[in-house]
Image 1 (tube, rainbow, N blue to C red):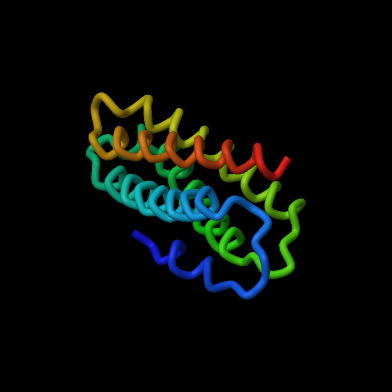
Image 2: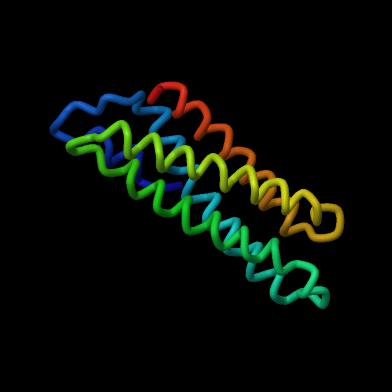
Length: 134
């Protein structure tokens, strides 16, 4: 678990987004980044690594975008809805792409199944947050 739920309430300025949903999104982004990094690393250990090249790439892209999204969402001072919307949209899209790719390998590789599930959770919470941002 992250400390987002502890840190966000300490902000002296008002936070314009639903705090519980914001915390969920930050935490899902961090968890998804870890799952994607682990999946990419596990893919590199597989004998069929050449067949997992796209999976490795999209997992690493997803991890990077999720980490960046968590950082942007944590920074609420001088909140800019346009920036937040763009970052969360990118996260939503890359989680969908990564989830789709990992699902292709999920029956054969447990790490891909776990990663696909986490990508779907992160994708969902990003969609929920986007609905509030507009």
